[in-house]
Length: 116
Image (cartoon, rainbow, N blue to C red; front, side, top):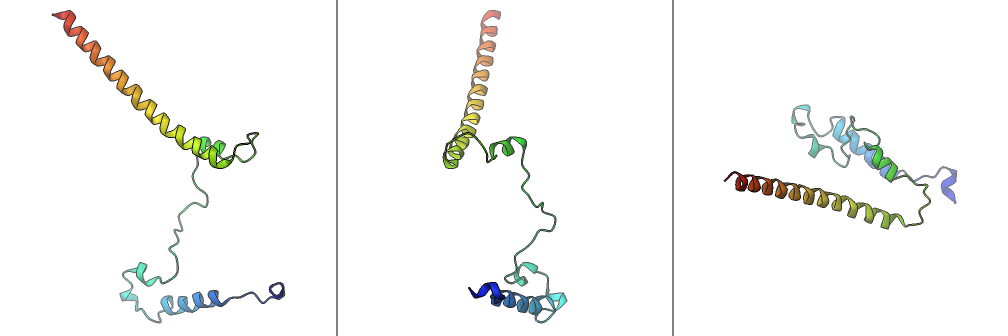
């Protein structure tokens, strides 16, 4: 009702502004005592100015996250299947490497047996 007419509650914003004036305008801390900025920041979060605005995503991830699909599966189950397949791929890769190593060992053993 009343919020549409400009009575937006700004108490939290005012508290942050007052804290900013106390902490950053030199009210409590002297410039030489500001060695540990993390403790003196107060309730203000750390903001990385160099961070990108969106997550870095590969084409594969973008295609996986597209929202308009003909699939009727719930996104939860789609995500569970994706995580399972991702771990299963690494299992298959390890299995193939072990099989290749076993074949190489057998080849070496056959060579030694053939030479003697």
